Image 1 (cartoon, rainbow, N blue to C red):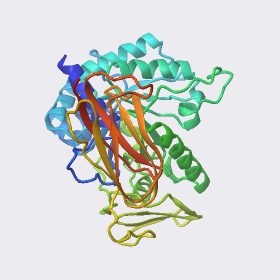
Image 2: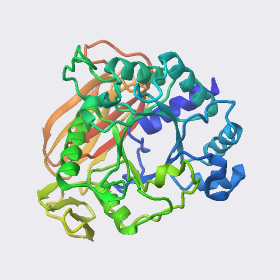
Image 3: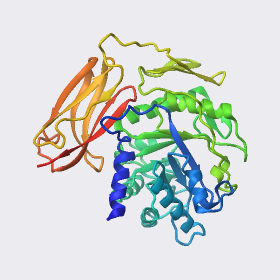
Image 4: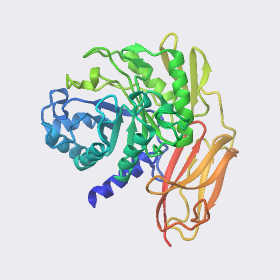
Length: 426
């Protein structure tokens, strides 16, 4: 029971948009820290003890651990469990366990995939990393959804790794892999991994490839609400280029990625080496003020803290504090903000406030603990300033919902989103 309660907590905390307390400061736009590590966890950076290894992983907000560690027969299984336990006791690091979904690769039966989900759950993982997720690995939508649904039913969010976002989120009919045009089970509690982001096998990604995929992902993200993680890939062991990493980091900031990281060669599978890589000393602010501006080869975006610029020809990057294209008029709120509902707990209704710094296309939605959308309270263009909307405790069909905890989420078309929780008492 305690394990299930903990999983539901992580489902709310991570999968449901990184919840923020009602009175807390708006979250930073800076990407959080991601590590993908396929070596033996206890051997990371030659630590060879659970406490020291756990301290290495604790530097990161998100950690993906490699294949097979969930098996009790694995030589580093017990150490892995100990490391995850330590990370949970310290807080701040979410651990996802690797499972290969590919048919062209391991071709695991669905029963074995379910077993491995259960084993990762028992090992303490906070979520599942499904690799080789796309049609290019002969993974059908039916197989994708079966795996994702099983993880969700276990209370675990999913990171899906597939090169073509259409293969993960699209509903177009594919005669081989999605003949019925079925929708994806991936939803707003989940994550997409953008592998080889801006740096692919040590080389700069082309402008066309980067921008096309980034915009495609943004469109799917706006519709579904998942978060994006990104990682570079390397062509040689012990090879690190700070300029390339900072270039990718600024690109991740530009598109509002949840977390990003430098991918060590083979994700440290053979070397167990994963030195911590410093991040740029940049405060990206808390609010995007516009969409990505394509002035090829220069791309720019403004935040409430300054202007972000990337040159895809020169492979340079910058963040200039205090320079923005959009200002605020006197008396207007200075940031995108979702206020606490009142009363809370409530019965039969409650009022939700939100503030907009400028005219915005927004959505205000209600979700339950499992991430299912209960109702859409507002959708459309709203003027700058304060707005108040009341929820009467009914779903989209007008049926009263049960007592319990619900989440309300405000999002706009610029990638900004905030979520808070409330309690209905019948």
